[in-house]
Length: 188
Length: 234
Image 1 (tube, helix red, strand yellow):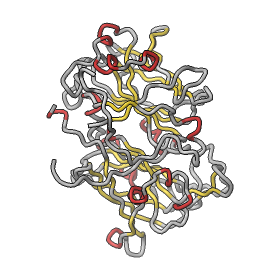
Image 2 (cartoon, one colour; image 1 turned 135 degrees about the vertical axis):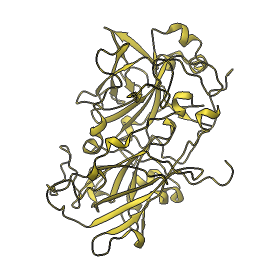
Image 3 (tube, rainbow over the protein chains, first blue to last red; image 1 turned 45 degrees about the vertical axis):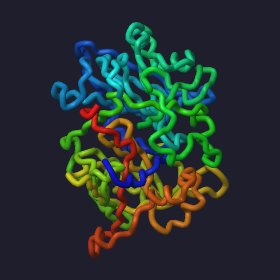
Image 4 (cartoon, one colour; image 1 turned 180 degrees about the horizontal axis):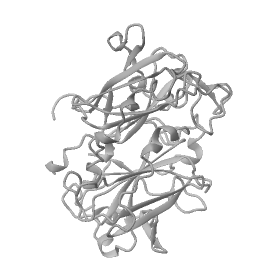
């Protein structure tokens, strides 16, 4: 498009008191229990003191199992889930591992889920990606993971398989819980 | 840097910073490392689509969600949701939440000793129309004190949650009211350093939105950044 860009509306914090406005959409899973290929993604949001964040809202967004997005998906597929963290800072989402989709240059990426986290104290959200630790071949050829030279930062993007569930913690800052999660901003 | 996925410049540098000492809660929650700026992939260039079926008739009228009338000044808040090229964002979900006319939230942890209103919860949602327009009927929220610093007061505001056509456009923000003297001293509003950018969060009084004898009207247009090429164009 040509012409002058409009001034973009800036971000402000979600604040502490969003539950009554956002929880209506915060209990749906991406797939139902027993669905083919169902996995559980869960974790805890931590602050810089290593304390759980009980008032965060997070959202995930992903391709389906064959790497498609609506409207090219089967009926009922949304690819989206919202969660409000519980009193212990935890979230749990039932979903499926997404298929591989290309990056902006057409290169195939490893399976990953896009995640955004909002909280009191965050004047703008943090964006990250959930990759899967048991996809080592795909991860090794993922264009973003390949460019992350800091192996500690890279490790924060990998959901670990523990007792049949994928665990992905979000650390807003480095603490006794581990290094700060690698967050992203988007360019064009 | 084979694939060029890591970039030097973000889409916008007008958003507030993660660390803003005047807003105390940022100290332990704002990341200390700068986010890595990346070219969004196909996932981030798509975004969730919410069906009309999720919205109930009174979801956009916060004054009609209980048996009685809420207390306070009834207002209409309406505007257009668009991308930075001015293209309307059609059929997309807009959510709001706010304090009541006494400055109290319907939230268990809000301990401000102002009364709750049994006829007002303060949450609403709607879908934008074909021109990207949304419209809510609500009660004007009041200012309220908070513990950030001595005698701290938040200006009256309505929280807005917005989706574009791409996940990169996801926005949660706050709408303020014109002429509010508390905006100048509010650390959250002033985390936006450029006054011209902050002004985009202030709604405009609009006679055309008023309902004679019933409600005053405020217009607030919302522009989402990150208007990338459509995924089909990649």
